[in-house]
Length: 209
Image 1 (cartoon, rainbow, N blue to C red):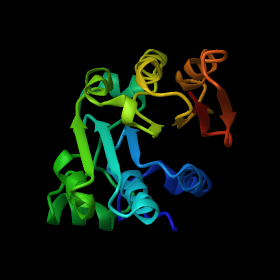
Image 2 (cartoon, helix red, strand yellow; image 1 turned 135 degrees about the vertical axis):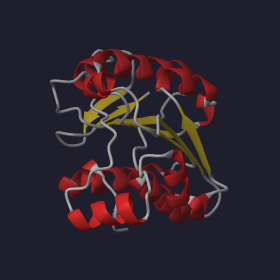
Image 3 (cartoon, helix red, strand yellow; image 1 turned 180 degrees about the vertical axis):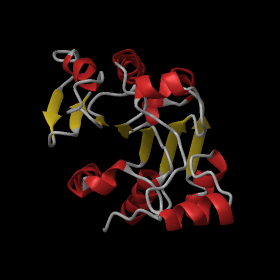
Image 4 (cartoon, rainbow, N blue to C red; image 1 turned 90 degrees about the vertical axis):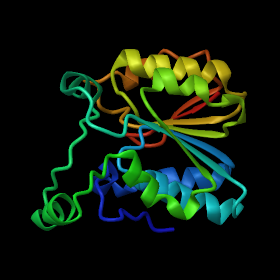
C-alpha cells in the first residue's frame, strides 16, 4: 500500500523509505493489536489502521498515546515533540488556520482522521508514563515508539513496555540515529535483556522482546 499523508504533517514526508519499512514490518508480523506512542497529527496512525484492516479486516485494535495539544515549550524542546500548526505551505496554513480553524494536533482532529476505524481505535491523551499503565500491554503485538525523545522518557517507556508485554513481540523505535536525543542510548542499554535488537535502517531500530 502507498503511505498517504492526508494533507498533514509527518516526519516521514522527508523519509518515505522509513515509512515503507514500517509498513513492511507490519505486513510481515501481521499484528492484531497495535500501539503507537507519539501519534502527533495521526498520519502514521491512519496508515497503520489501513494496513491492519487489509490484514485483519475489522479484527484489530489500534491504541495511540499523545498529549494532543500544545504543552510546554521547554519540555517540547527536550523531548523533540514540538506541537505547532504552522505550515510551510501558505495554502495549507490559510486553509487550516484561517478557513477551517482546525488544530491538527488536537485529539478531536485526530479522531476525525481516524473515524473510518472508530470501532477499532482507542486514543489516550496524556504523557506516556501515565497512559502506558492504562493499556493491557499483554494483549499488544506490535509497538511503534515515537513519543518523547529524551533518554529518561525513552528508557521509562521501554521499561514499562518490556515489563508488561509478552515475549517475542515487536517494538520499533523511531529516530535511533539522532544521537543528540536519548533513543539510541536507551535502546542500546537493552542489550542482553531482549531477544533481538536490529537496525532496520539508520532511523528505525527493531526490538524483539
